[in-house]
Length: 437
Image 1 (cartoon, rainbow, N blue to C red):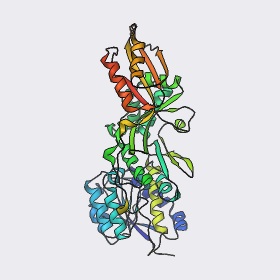
Image 2 (cartoon, rainbow, N blue to C red; image 1 turned 60 degrees about the vertical axis):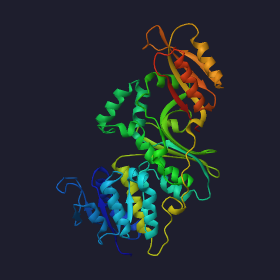
Image 3 (tube, rainbow, N blue to C red; image 1 turned 180 degrees about the vertical axis):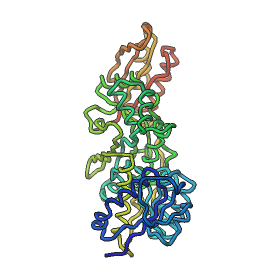
Image 4 (spheres, rainbow, N blue to C red; image 1 turned 90 degrees about the vertical axis):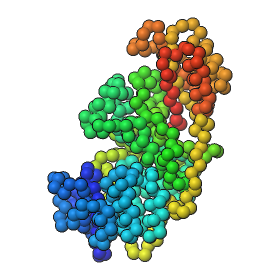
């Protein structure tokens, strides 16, 4: 049997502790599957005296993760510190330069520095594995990097944040407000005390930027993602969507267009009969559309200690199964030096259907004025209805519009025109309708 694979883990929080626990419990099975032992040789964390409920055995303790990354006592450095810069970046760079394989769950780090780190890994001939960085335990990275050879990807989209999906699910199922659902998510530990990262789309954007690079062979460009969160979604939107045959989800979408690559994160209406509309609670799902395979949907636990630990251990196992002298594949599906420059599509040129909810003063001529603004911008309406809402004063009404395919620029111009006409009580709600099977 080959020599043991020596592993150093930096970060012993929820995920790190789960990795150690699972490796200990599954030691015999992992050895059998990989043909060699996985040995936890060294660890690093902020507080060495904290009781984490795990056995570290004879693992050497390092107060500094960078020192751990450089030690000759490990073959694989597992980064679970978190953060896009600081100790995480310094430690991963140190490990790669020292010729150590790296496993990370850090989407923020990869979305900002992934191409640079990939270049170092490929130059040093070591692996940089990151399955746990996107959608927790769902093997979407491995699928896109290895299993879709020969396929040309046209679009990748999905539910990539369990907190946002949990809130939207509760809003629909129980008729609760966004504020109440968020408070419940925080109580259950699904949302942080400051939930901005999750509910405003930043977490999804980091994950989407990684998938975009894999899908289209381009450099990562997280700063070029159009982003809207779910904090402005109301019960009026949830109810209207249901009556029209839709369900609201926070989606990350990347697709190739004539003007470049379009990346966007925003609340989206998907048909209730579609598969992705059936993804509820904290579950994640990623759909990949290709020319050969068609559409592939991967769904499962997207967060949590065990789900993420499963992906981390899978990445370590892949390293354990590799052999000296084996030529490793490129980190992002093609060599970092050959990743194409990212060309951003014109977001306002985005074409699709739209849901528009307007709270208007209930007076003569409002319908006609709205219809005229839409017609003047070549927007064809699938429906326009006056929608009763018991929460509104009697002199106000909700007007719900569903458009046929049109452009974002046209919708925004038409809505701005309606606002100028003075018929609106407050800012209208505009939600894209996404094609989904």
